[in-house]
Length: 318
Image 1 (cartoon, rainbow, N blue to C red):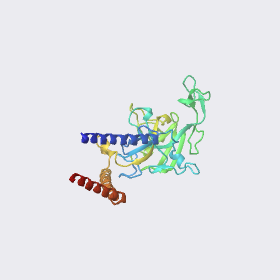
Image 2 (cartoon, helix red, strand yellow):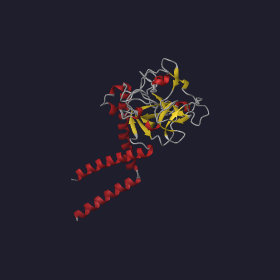
Image 3 (cartoon, rainbow, N blue to C red):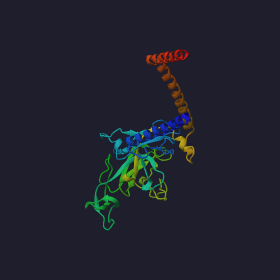
Image 4 (spheres, one colour):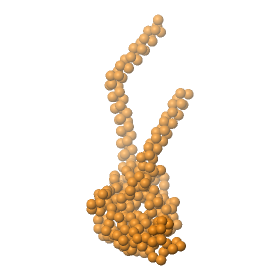
């Protein structure tokens, strides 16, 4: 009976520790869930998994976007900026987690390249614009929602008060075609321009492909309804990518259709990490036991127990 209760106690203790850990992560990050598992290779910067870079099977801690401001790639490379030099997961700027067009399909974890910000706006007329682009969620000069954006700014750059966004980023190289260029982009509304770090499959392609000057929309990301992804609104951002726990998310991907995204070296790294972790626990347990046994308090307690045993034996003989 005692063994049964002991087993239940261990189970409840284990679940309690998991609950405390999960709750602590939620409080620390402000996000629920506080972590995500990366499912694709769109953020890889080489053919092999690397610590410090987002690879398939990595677990990423997620910070709520209301905890701090998002730093874009453009802002992070601006000389003299308060956020100059800010980097995350191998490149300047933050990596964000967002829903494609605010939909309900699998979120995307990509780097924020720049933010298209409204400069000159006018009120719409019955929900329509004679000039500019209608942003239904933006307040116009009168304070009513639904403003026509006539010109744009890009924080962190010299792009100010322009009707379309043109920006070259020589520092952001592409695998086969030079560097990232934003050409004649007129955003559908305020929002982030995003892309994956994998220069072979993403990089200069951009999630919002029309920003490269190609209005065909054949490339880039699409939402669950097949509609091309537009500039990422602030309200579509569910989190900012924080520290990574490499490889351990592979366990989740192993049972999904994304298992093929995991590189062979990542599987080996996971196996090595598990072996090291098990050995560390076993060795640590032995070291703690030896330290306790060599402590004076332990020796005194052991001698006292032996004396008590002898006293009890003497009383029984009498």
